[in-house]
Length: 186
Picture 1 (cartoon, one colour):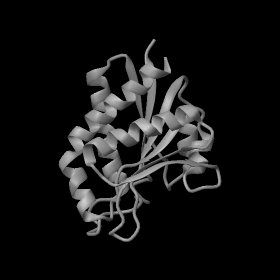
Picture 2: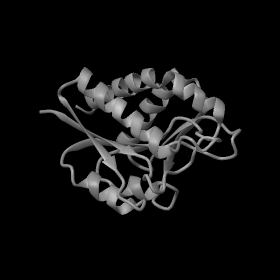
Picture 3: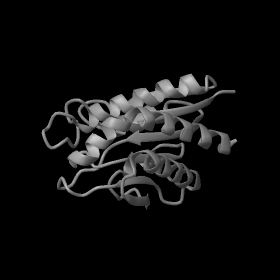
């Protein structure tokens, strides 16, 4: 039996999220590209893994994202790829999982260290969040273990350039990380 994984694209085209300082690349575009690269790697590495791309319905309909994830039967996990933003100077990588989800926490740890091994960003940690925290509605609303991945700050030009240089390697490492998670899940 194949394992099923869902990869989530951040935000929507009409409400694309945070951006690089020059406003040329938004979370939606970066996330779409990374999700597709991971998707391709998963099929290249493990034909027994079935991957799904989740796009949040317009106009930034979070409940539609949750429904899309929950409509796919037997998912092992859901990973939504976002990017942090603050003031152009803050940096680092962090993963968010739902408080109390042991598999979500385990997936977050694997993804965090996969990202750190490639990007070498500041380690901002693995954070357990509740339904009331930012992003918590998604993590609480989907049935499989889930993570919101924030590998870098998109408004920090140095971090974005670093990501751009290493995104191919990052996609391979993250695909390997997902496969490791699936193997541990049993």
